[in-house]
Length: 197
Image (cartoon, rainbow, N blue to C red; front, top):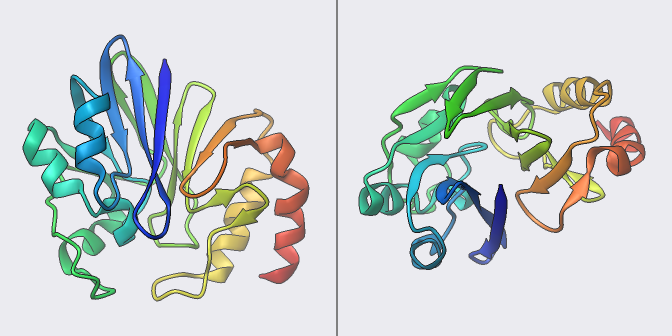
């Protein structure tokens, strides 16, 4: 399994290409992602969204249509892909698979978990493949996702942090913004953030 990433748009939203046996899974195709994906993904088979914020789903529609591939999104955030709740002019996209909280799917012989960590958004999920966690805007290096947006919930975020702090696995974290990190190295920071929620 090989990972490629590139920050997209003015928010530097990381788009990921996960390559498994020369087929690719696209995670969070943000603003302008199609041109980069066309160069680096020869045979993509699906788009996975960690959550519904515009900067993570902006290119869903054009990537899905260009490659004729389905979109998987946490079901509680699907409304953001069709209603543009932040009035950003986000191209609307149709979700093929509305993933239930903590559901697992299988792609390319891999079990892929959508671990539900609400707080930043109602459906905010970390996508886990083997020991890799694509955390979206749940966990960053030294920080967490904001909870002062419409549809955010500080109480939910606190519960999500408490739950992930109990994890024994030391996942490699690929966040929605910023640099790669690990769950073990973030635990002290995550505990500190609990005091601010």
